[in-house]
Image (cartoon, rainbow over all chains, first blue to last red; front, side, top):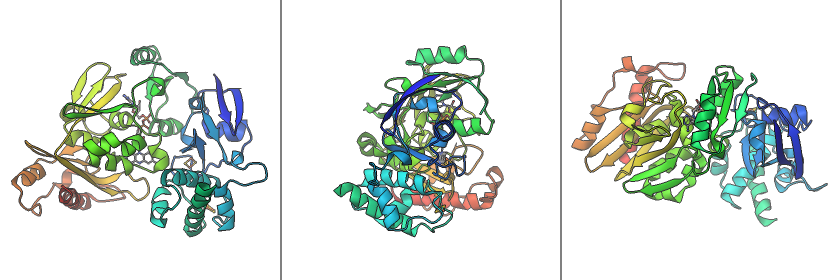
Length: 156
Length: 260
Ligand SMILES: Cc1cc2nc3c(=O)[nH]c(=O)nc-3n(C[C@H](O)[C@H](O)[C@H](O)COP(=O)(O)OP(=O)(O)OC[C@H]3O[C@@H](n4cnc5c(N)ncnc54)[C@H](O)[C@@H]3O)c2cc1C
Ligand code: FES
Ligand code: FES
């Protein structure tokens, strides 16, 4: 099937089989390996990407469902050398250890910031991270990073 | 995943014909139950009929004494809808507690109700609020709709269009969430009407059910302490024994009733 969509700001026209998951198209087809597969069972959020600006699990979405829509992966967040404010906040606040969960956490963080605005409590962020697993950090610095990133996004 | 054909009809009628001519077909709404099932090959449809391009199926509106929610309304949309918040705040609250934000942005009410997972949240609201499940072929009363684990009154290929909740005077939902999946280990929905209370329990048994003794106790306005469900009819799994679920039912009932 032919699909047309915008990926990281660029118009794409591709032929995919309906059984292709978005995450498979991104990683195997387009070699955008920043989007990770943690569980492949819709639990961990490592595969989160933005679909029309909203975080979704790309392991639970068919590539054909993105026809006519806009997809942003972690590779598409920075503007040239300038990191997205949420990426910068993860670096600044050491919101990662091994980094495997990080792309999905950044996407979830962007969603949280968009829904809740500039000043978000740690409790709200922890609650809204229910769909993201991290096996390293214990989450504290991730929450700090999202809190700071949300402020930066609002002020940017 | 096994290969399949993909159809994206623009009307309910076209969806029905794509389903009828699609061999072993399946309807796709939010995909957050169906796609995992296809990945694990529990489901292997020949044709996937995607309902997402049908206009109007996500509408939310009050008509007369009912709140109508379109089958394709996402959990996040129900949670954030001012119409839902005004008519039945407990329903918005329930929707906000399903899964996680990424699940809520895709999963739909119609998909959840059609699937009738014994631990899903919406079936408790549908049953407690005496809802009408309207389809492309007719309508089902909630009391006849849910027929035990993953089984409903829907015919093969019958498509839910919208669900009409009878707006209660007051309602509340209390759920003891599974800490990983967020599904209900036990969830109790209480709705209060001029004619009496309706109580529906999800998660505890092989399918959602009404709890007549609890309804009578709430109508009488007395203590809920003496209520007990028979554990031999409840689920036991690695997460909770039947006895524990029976105790949780009373606790969740009290929590919901306290909000009314
Ligand atoms: C990590 C995770 C956590 C979750 N946590 C919860 C939770 O806490 N509580 C909860 O209740 N659910 C939970 N869910 C399930 C989620 O709510 C699903 O989205 C929902 O059960 C199915 O809805 P869907 O729109 O995704 O349906 P789909 O997966 O698209 O479809 C499910 C089934 O319904 C059929 N169907 C879909 N739409 C229609 C229609 N309009 N008419 C007739 N048949 C139809 C499909 O053919 C399929 O058989 C969770 C899911 C995941 C992945
Ligand atoms: S890989 Fe998609 S949720 Fe874990
Ligand atoms: S930093 Fe290693 S999984 Fe989160």
